[in-house]
Length: 168
Length: 184
Image (cartoon, rainbow over all chains, first blue to last red; front, top):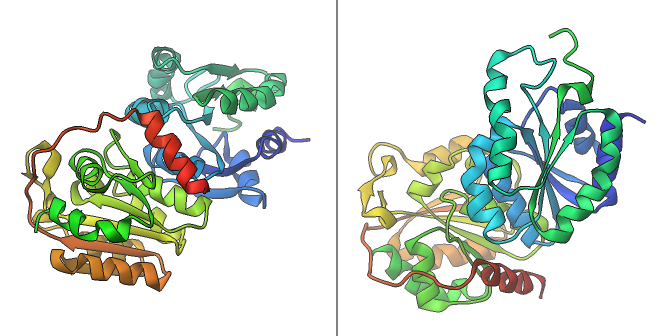
């Protein structure tokens, strides 16, 4: 089974039925799989703040949400995470493409990568780092944990996890 | 009319609907005028009233009204294409357009200058965009509810604020009673 399919299977198995995304090369296969599943309503966002607002509304409407984004979005969404998701105690699994790690070809991506874990730590956001493909075995447990504790939870997936950037 | 007068005017209509209310004075005013479990008050996060309301409308069948401001829509202008391209007929976005940032002291917004949010909404693909004057808000809002069509209403009104207290209700209490009202 492809890793993309496995990830989306875990979302569906945990009753995640509202997924918002911004485009990402590493997560393109997951996003395609999300779009293809009947169990999931997929709504692309123009930025991640908007996406977190959509997720907050969907959760209050009875659907389990998920946001798929890049780690640069942590810089964009700190206020929303603190004053909406955390302040009102809402669950939000964040499946994150961790750009700027080993095998990264674009130097500017490293500039946010070096801040990513520190920012998540400062925000007291539980953070899991997928480096090897087998790390994704924990996704099911991470999703259960997220909806148990009503917190935003970060799942960082780096280039090694995805097998590098290919010809880029 | 200023925003608080409009909210007082339309409170009997809002009372029966799920309302997501914008940060700052709009939420404080609605809370003072007619606090209801069906009101979700935003205590922070400027700009996301329309997004929260859209997510809520997409997730369940009851009518949802997002009360937003011109300044807040400008903050999150990307919301309008998302609304336009994800039509859900139980959703109404009501933008109270007083051409100013009311909660911070009535500094002018670009919507009060050259920018026309109704035209932006139309250009983004929103199909039912209605502009109205403050005194007609109730009539237009009721018509939008009765139409069962997703509608964006831009209410033109005067800038100005009343003195009133902040909301001291705990956010988790606001959210919990709102979710119970949504589910009931």
